[in-house]
Length: 70
Image (cartoon, rainbow, N blue to C red):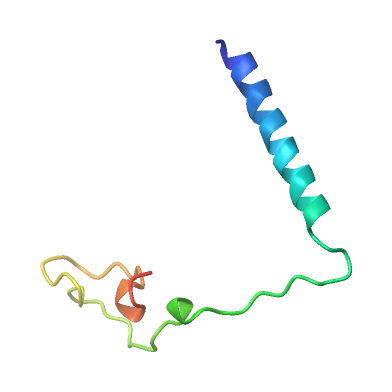
């Protein structure tokens, strides 16, 4: 199987999934998103020193210590 055939198969599969999702979703019900508790971040002061999680490395402000790691 060459790359063009693989791409065609992927496009067809994606098109089938999109069509199925559009047909299954009721048009009269709006989509709403609610925040999940795992997305809440704590208000910790920014550190220019060592990382709170891994003190052997410098803090790079990744936000891992401000959340539950999700």
